[in-house]
Length: 437
Image (cartoon, rainbow, N blue to C red; front, side, top):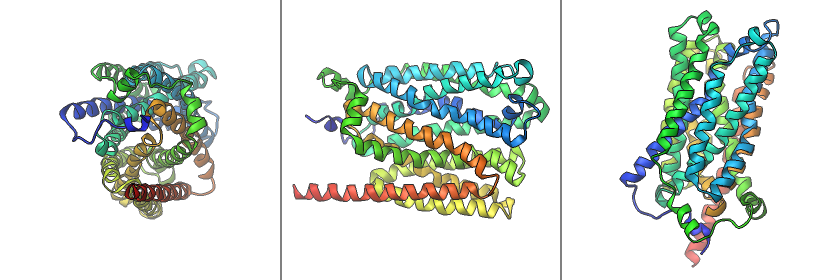
């Protein structure tokens, strides 16, 4: 029997146990993703604290975003190693381990001495901890998608994966809300003195809580069946992926590039961009960001449901078009009238929700025996380049053009349209083959 027949348990409806699994997996993912992204919400403060005071403001921000990017560049190694053991030993073990590997560096960040205390060692230590975080998240995100996809009925796989994606965006929302609360509760001087440490210390505790939540989850029935039939990969899973599933790797990488740029530009970098480019107050920028993330969370669920109903191809084509239009409107209107910040950002956030359609494409691109490795390799390598280089590229580009994020997002939407057209052609071909049989 082909491993692809084990892609999903059945066509049954979602049951109580399914919802419990989805809820626990999504909540754990939200808490871990909070740990990974809280860094970006305090990028302005960290730039001043961890680099020489005499350094030009744009250069310290560039280096701070460079350290942020290092977390993305470290994702492939961590993801590949954890996925290897996930394909050979089981999804649940790796799914739980990734939490611990994230919680400890996050706690350590909250206790780091600054440049004033230890000089050049401060940014170097910050960089090392960020790399550890990147390695942890490299196994978490692909692992979560594979885990719920193999627990869920076939006709609900898109929705199940989008619940996890929504959980990850909820982690971003949690970071935005805590950053907003800290900016409201403390003065800029207090934040610079000590309050910037709070979100990292809180994140470490969140990680330990998430690790306990994962103890309630069970191994996926699909992997358990493979193990019982002794049908696990007989060679290095990644070797099989690169040798036999090049098309799946390419498709997954393009889909990931689309996802990464949308999240990094429209959500993660936007608060700092709004403050610097349009002189919007930090509290207003973070409130608008929180609203956009709520809309993004809903948008992810809608995209997952649509993928199950009308197919991934049409979902990508429609979602990419709407995202391009809303992004262009967001940046062009704000350049003239910042009073429209909230409705425009909420609309853009909802349209970014098209990323909720991405994991279903990747889950279906690989057979069960090498699914974790195939998805993890494709996702993390592509995200390392897209997510890691984007902050650096935009920091430089913004020196010459205030509309750089808008143009960057439009280019990304073109990638989404191309992916959608390819998927639509594949879906039509599959239907013709089914009718011919």
